Length: 55
Image (cartoon, rainbow, N blue to C red; front, side, top):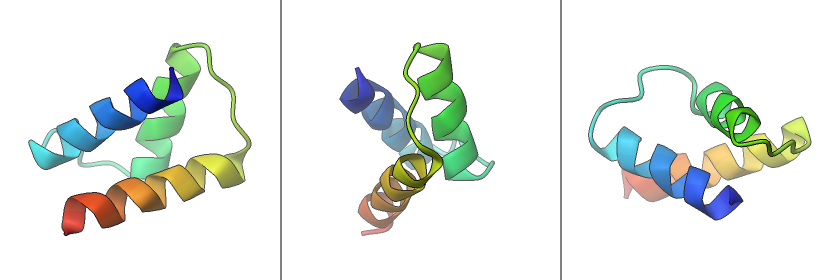
C-alpha cells in the first residue's frame, strides 16, 4: 500500500501535478489510504521521492 502511494506521488511530481510540500502531500495521501506512519518516516520517503524525481 505504501509503495503504491509513493509511486503515485512520484508520478504526479513528474507530471507537474504537485506544487505543495512533498511531505505534506505524501502524508495526506497515506492518511487517505488508511496508512499512518511516523512523521520522520514520511519525511524520509518524501526525500527519497524528491531525489529520485530530480535525477
